[in-house]
Length: 315
Image (cartoon, rainbow, N blue to C red; front, side, top):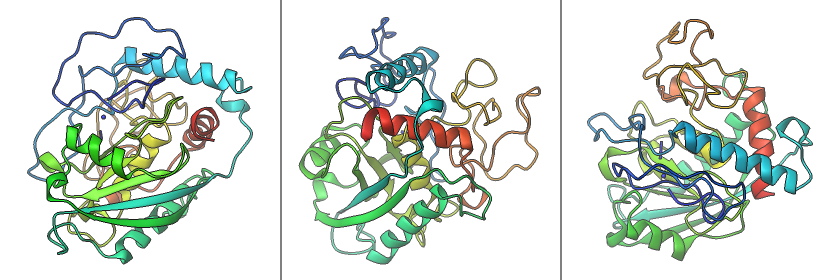
């Protein structure tokens, strides 16, 4: 659900929502303009009930996805790795800094309690260790809460996607290196649940994930209040596409063990099969759009892809 920027010179985080840019020219892997994101052909972004219908910048065009894949291969080779399958299994411990962006010090103003944040870290650790229902894959990633930073600034509230205020907020607040996950919580514009940046060869201040505060565990954004909006967005931060990327044709989400899916699934539609030759849709995957209670897995292929991206961009 989510972004713009440039893959090799900033973060592929997204062009402005609802902005249509010219098609990206052919790019050389490693080029400063590699994988510049354009807004065309987007799926509808997952939003809260009643939210605006807007395009999802984390749903890439075929050209954008191809450019990203070329860039990933380039940087894996540059770091002595041939491909995702050859990356030695890692067990990264990811430090997390949570920035609580609030209008004032009330809960209604975005001031969620520490308990919701610590519970969110537990949800991430369970999801990425394959412990959500005991049915997923252990991806090797662990998350540790390094700091909670509370910021009262009405001019940043609500957080407006891809705005000058969002960029200023991140430039002022972001902490750590390329392997530090910065999460920004608060009320979000247009009824959004969240967005995140894909990794790149040059991690800038825009890097991180923006999450609706009330989507954290115990929040009010039912059915998206068990913490898996953050699980999904961190998946993008670790280079996963949506399970429905590319629809029924092409390379889809670049992961062989997630069946192709024509479009995003909502709710928990058991037995859904939108690509007749590819198996039942992966509605339980964290990278679909289903309700939090329906999600419980990453696949081994997704784990390998995240490990490869970590080795290429964030290690």
